[in-house]
Image (cartoon, rainbow, N blue to C red):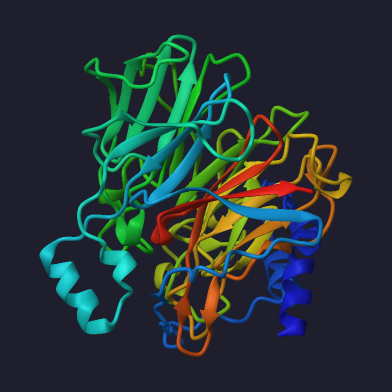
Length: 438
C-alpha cells in the first residue's frame, strides 16, 4: 500500500515530463507512450480484474464525527436534510445547499438489491430542493433555514450572476429572478438550456461556474455510460464542459473527453479552470485514477478511448488513434474509484499557511474496487496557481469498518464560507459538516 501511495503521489511529475511531446507532425510518439506506461506506476489494464465492494451506510453515532487535523474543530452545521449534495456560498454570505439524489428505475433497484448495492445508492425520490442557510453572526449555527426553491429535477449546480439565480437540473439550466436577502423564490423559472438527462451510475449531476466577469457560464455534463458501451451517438454533448452565455445562447464545447467532471473551481490568482473528474470502471482496483486537472480550452482528455494521456482503453482499442494521440495528461491523480466529486480552493484567511489557495476534494467513495477507497476529503497544496505537493488526507473517519464495508457517511460538495470555515455535504447522513480552524 505504501508503495502504491508513493507511485500515485509521483504521477503528476511523471506525466508532466511526458505530456505534450510530439514528433514533427504534431502526433504523440509511440516511444513516449511506452515510456509513460513504464514509468507512471499504473498497472496494465485487465478487463477481468474488476471487483465490487459496495459500502453500507450505518450513520454517525452520537459520539462520533469526521476527523480533521490537529488545530481544527469539526461540528454539525445543519442536519436532517435529505441527501445534501452541493454547497454554494453567495456573494452576501448566504449558503445554498442542493438536496438531490439519483432516481433509479424499478429494474435498476431490483438489480442493485440482488448485487448488494448500498441503500444510499437507491435512495428513492430526490428532494429536488435548494435550501437557504443563513449564519449572519458566523457562530457556526444557521439562525435561518428556508426551502429556497422547490420542484426541481435532480439539481446540482447553483450560480448567482447579478439579479439572476441559476440552477442546473439534470435535464437543463433554469434561470430565476434573484434578490439578495430574500428567503425564497416563488417566481417561475425559465429553462434557458436543455441538457441530456440522467447518466450511468450517478452521472446525472450538472455543475455550474462563471468566469471572473460573469460573461460566460461553464456547465459540466458527465457521460451517459462507463466507456461508450451504448454507442457514442448517445454521448452527444456529454463528457464535456460546455461554455455558454448567461442567457443560454452561444454554446460551445470548452473541453471534452472528461468522463464525469463534477467539481469546478478557478485556481486562485489565475484564470485557469480546474475540475474534479471521475474516471472509468472495469479495469481493476488501481485503474483508472480519478483526478483533478486544469482545463485547457479546446482540450481533449481521453474518454472513452484512452486514459491518463495515451493509455489506450482495451475496450476501445484502435477506434480513434487520432484522438488518443492528442489526449491531455491530467495534472493530479487522486486515487482509483474514489468518486471525487467536490472541489474547492481555500480562499479564506483563517486556515494555516499550508492550506492557503490549496484544493479540497470531496471523495464520495468507491464501489468498483475490492477495498474501499475515498470516503474522505483530500487536500492538494498549491503555489502560484499550480500543485506544489502530494495529495494528503484532510477530513477522515467516514469509514466505520473497512472489512464489512460499513461507513458512517460519504462526503460530496465542499465550500468555503465567508468567515473562512469549510462546509462539507455528507449526503447519506443528511448532514453538513463545518470545519473551522481553532
